[in-house]
Image (tube, rainbow, N blue to C red; front, side):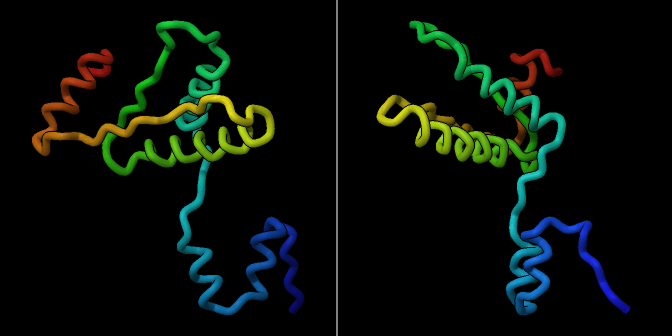
Amino acid sequence: MTFTFRHLTSSAAALLAEHDEQRIRAIRSRRWVLYPRAKQALDRLRGLLDQPRGTRMPSIAIYGDSGMGKTMIMKQFRDEQAQWRARYRRGQSEQRPIEHPSARPDGTEALLSRRSMGAE
């Protein structure tokens, strides 16, 4: 029986020749999966970069329950922008995301955030 691996990317196919430990590590590693809401958030973040400088710059709040991908979206944006800055904007100011973890375990702060954004 002959196996063909045309359905795999070249990097995935290359893993087939690795030892079990390396393949298992690759399987368990975190991956970026672009889903529609993440794309929407990334598009909005990219749009903020196109705004002309001013005294009152626009911003965005990304809200969601724990484990929904907020940090992964910000890391993806940060990595994408780091590559862009390295190529085109050396020495200029950079954007810095702010992470605001929920301060109250009873969810009161999250409820107030959702209400203030009209999400509830």
